[in-house]
Image (cartoon, rainbow, N blue to C red):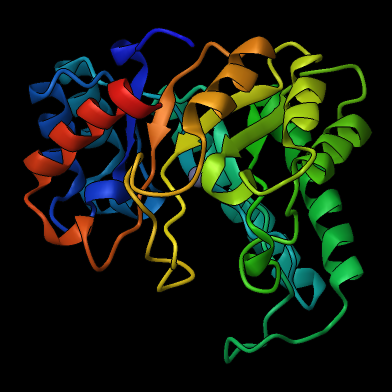
Length: 288
Ligand code: ZN
């Protein structure tokens, strides 16, 4: 088994977002000796892009990723255009913050203005995702910002992401960046992919292209899970063999950060955020 690597711990800022605004999170991570964070766009917008970049520089905290771009499908051309424009802004923000990649949650079925799903054409949504990533990739490559496709658990196929397996993400990378990395890769989130029979093989497949494994997200799968979105477990409290997945990632060449991303309305969002960070540090070293 691999030795603990405490210096690789990153905190996805969703993990303490209910307790702290982004400036508090940056200060809190610095205080706890946590070197990396992965912030969300709404938190950066609230704190100010330039101000956030300054706080990061002053604190020595760096980004392991930026959350998030994506959400490509839309019912009409103008909607898809608006999504692409928004993604280009996300690329610019990621650059300003020095992120190693922009994480893509690709989107599900296109929505009506009232938020309901406007079509049942899942294959069509997947085609829009492929085309959207392809278009964004041209600009992102020019800018020098890698894009990391995050496959989401299939329970989110309709409303968040219709790329649901590592195999699908690898297929997109093969199609849009056939020679290897070329600015396109994958964010592996254990919460979304732990159940996949082909996980080890698909991690190896991604690792065969140097740099395609761009991010690694940690939490745990609770049994039972009470909420589809907001009941993720702290590492060690659920059923994912986190040390095994980490070994697969490292065997495939991944050397990047280990990013803790826990949405937990019932538990961790209600706790003292310093306690949450201390627990992340402890569990990262003991069970991951
Ligand atoms: Zn994630």
